[in-house]
Image (cartoon, rainbow, N blue to C red; front, side):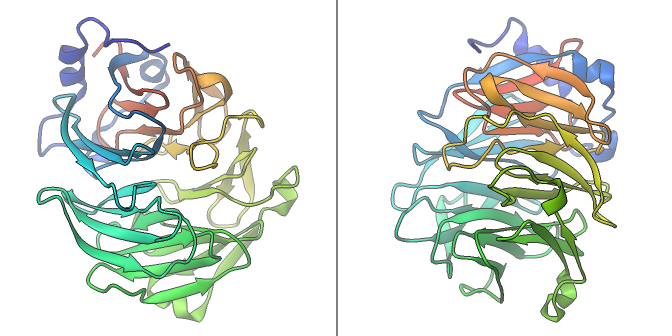
Length: 346
């Protein structure tokens, strides 16, 4: 069980962080020895119940989390300290994502059973700049554009919506046949959508009205009755797509849709508080994939061959979120606690 911060954690955390203004994904030099040396640097117990959303700023200097306790916490990754505690009593918060180039701005999906709104939230002023209404079911995914003022949302209401931050109503809508999810690639030129069938549809962001430009069938690779994709993400390099179903974690070629490999996640992994399986992610250099697994561990695999490089132990339940910092030698996992992992040599 993850307890108090390890001795000397704060100096180690500082050493693992790059200097302000120098952070970039290109500076991360990850390797198998570094990944194998990851150890707990700090543990936070701020959330009183399950963590449902987590995100880094593009420069890796800040981290935000939201949870079932209607709290949002913002952390400084340089100082390894909590810097903000915000409450969202009226709507709750199920998902949260920083906006591009803005440590004080985020889009957050509500947890309300009746009001399915997404909030444009100014952390500095602690107020909602805009409420986006359109979905009639729970929001399942949020993906801000990497450099423009827009974002995608997927929902249980069988629709994907494209939003402009300056407008309260969606600017575009894609109808599906079941629960939907969607995600931009790293350049924002293409987005992937899963719309209720075991398929991944790719759209040109500028010409989405023309419909998908290609579609990949997941059915040949999916086992079991639940074939719905619960999560889809492009790799930072743009070559791969990570797809999570209820019981499988797949890596697809983003150009031809072929299966590259499958990661050995246990079919019985505990569901997240939202009912979704643990959310995986890529390392910033696309070399590794990380995900919580059954029993409370977090696995790190080589991206293209699913070779396990590290197994992080200590949580008592499957981490709902696991992510690499986009710019530093730092991994954060969220379960009953929020654990920050750094190389032991840091």
